[in-house]
Image 1 (cartoon, helix red, strand yellow):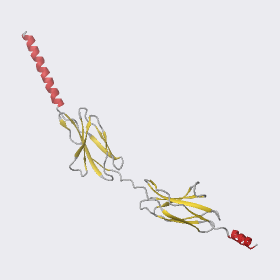
Image 2 (tube, rainbow, N blue to C red; image 1 turned 60 degrees about the vertical axis):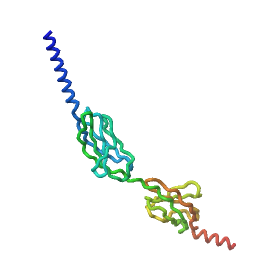
Image 3 (cartoon, rainbow, N blue to C red; image 1 turned 90 degrees about the vertical axis):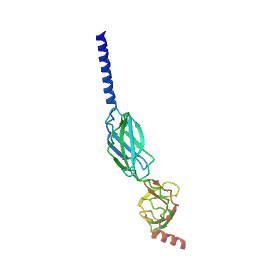
Image 4 (cartoon, rainbow, N blue to C red; image 1 turned 135 degrees about the vertical axis):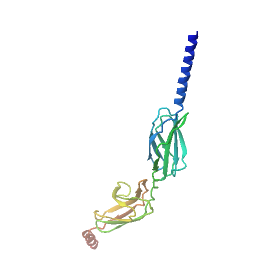
Length: 231
């Protein structure tokens, strides 16, 4: 019985030692995440990625700042997370990020800081040009002019048709702030219809009014008509 009691006490002591050792191990905070990277995903979103360096974290705290000081926690994420999309941000604005892991024993040190700016806000679609005017400039040319109503266009698209309702084809893509164009290489004595629109990276404006003009007839044709009128 004495031997049994001694063995029992030895087992109890061993179990207590193992439990104490386990408790000490479990009380260690996790390793800090590393390799934090930030990428602008849009004018209001930033994509964050990092490497998880521990296997015993409960989760991650993600923090953000606008000045690299006074960081504010923006998310508490579950274990094994290594990415996060931060949204509802201001366009064209610089943000700083850092993250750390945590468990019941405490928090790790911080990761490296990542710095990135959101993309600029997209430009609004430009206003449509107006006041398109067309007039003959010879037997093979028509001169065009219009009013530029936008200050954010990347350029203009000029189109032409033979009837004003269908068959529109692009004549020229013109630079920003252009307000006129000479369309050459046309058929003499022929009516042409035109319209113009403005564009930028966000899209294309509506079309201007439609303007039409006829190229001049060759001198021989005019002389023939004059002779016919005298007969």
